[in-house]
Length: 303
Image (cartoon, rainbow, N blue to C red; front, side, top):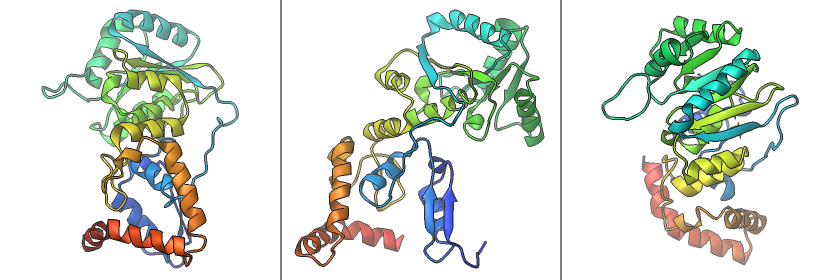
């Protein structure tokens, strides 16, 4: 699709797009302005922000009427207690999400599949509640119908895969249960947690897993930017001049990846320096950058 006079490209949920996808969108006009939005910027985007390729605006408060989500790590030994809490929430008229990493059982991955969790809840754990199942292999009409029943309050519990990660808004849902939470990345856990806390009632996110440092960090904050920084420390920022969106930073700069304060300082100093690109200092930096990155830039141009 071509546009007559494209001036602005807005990419919402930016973390769900690849580098080439975003580049193609930004090239559909004559150098349009680009606005990308995400609650959890992917490591590569965060590094581009800090290296000066993107400016950043941070919205650090909840929309009016929303409440922070309390996050708890729930080991298997506490599962029955959690089900008791869920029943209490449903009795209050609230609704519950269960998110699973798989649709069905897999020999390659040891994790609870959505279909098995749905059957266990429906026949064993919560047989008196109204439970729906949603996953990506369902026919679109069936999936939409199940989501609509949950949205309108005709179902108490929605069991799903990550298809509900974005675009689902049910303010009456106050509990998010994430099975095998250790199998999800920090950014994805934060996105899933964002499906609750969309109304005025207290909301909860239960991470079904044994405690570890990564999950403890997620439970300690609801700040998406802090989570993105931690994600960058753990996964690496990827390629500044390529399409890889995580992993070790090339050209020997990986040691800076976990130091957001130093990266931000570098960003600010670079902006000040390039305010006068003809100055001796700026010319020296440009020359050194070209020497350091010329091979990689040439590879990107060829590809």
